[in-house]
Image (cartoon, rainbow over all chains, first blue to last red; front, side, top):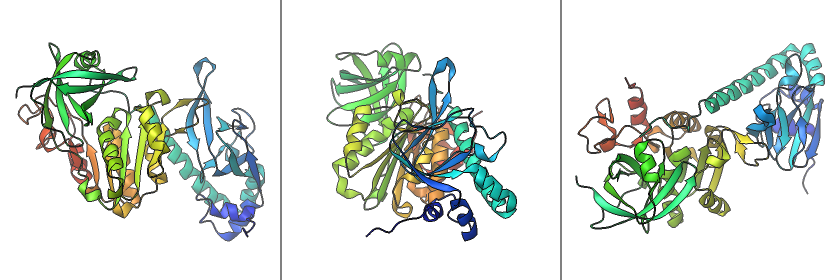
Length: 158
Length: 267
């Protein structure tokens, strides 16, 4: 019989958080709940209050930006084991992008306001989380720079 | 070297600016190419360009992107039209070290063309390798080469195919992100892996770094360098990097060698 996995178990399995001390995992899990979403659902929209982040357990989430002409452009896809959303951590706590499910998605949704309060009370937790989110931001920045390079454009011309 | 005369027997419009020409010899055929080698294709009255072989059987195939006068002339050829061919030239992908181990094939943009024959060869002799992963990157979904063949590959259960694009319109259900992001997701055993990588130089640098970070030895990462090959027989020096003629010693190098060459900046 499959054992029931708690939010704490799911948080502890996430690659970004797995090496945190047990107390930290307890605190984070205390702000989390499970969500299952069908395809095409908006997780959040640009400009709205950023109060949650998502640990993707299965499925895929498209990160979209509004492009000229009213189009939406997907700039990144977040798959299993990734994390979506860091605007909850930084003022003014507003989303800068849209996030939409691509297929059936299971996430652990973490209440950002709840976790910010715990970070204020426990600066060690805050520092360790900030380290991880900073690394995440750096990784995404590097990826965005590479995408901006338009590396597949031609440079030869013969 | 006198070019062989070839005739176009099929022309496949892959993308708005990219065409695959399937050709057959009119007279004596050129020597059959190894995987990763290139031919010099001559559009009569216009010029000659180096083009990697993208298909070997039953006929030679070359996938050409129209970016200049000569490539535009080649892309405009129709079945029945003639062209000149010199080759094959250069080094090919060394697949022997991959035998019995895992094979990772990475193609970015038009760089999928020179590795397509590697994937086809792996599928034709599938028992030769353990895990085979094909990682493909392109600018946008409509810039993905060989879309039908990619779909065929995806349907196989003995091949891992991961595709990503740099950007996509809303509604695209595939992956968006840099091709290096696929390397962490692919299910190969780094210590037993041979990787062949072809694409823009900057993409290959990032891919090599990601493969090294996963533990693939540098001498088992092969890349194909693109330079201004003009004579293709190591005489003119146009493709020279430091002491190396890319047309003769390359275009395929192991990463240990390629990394040193790429430190020699173009002037």
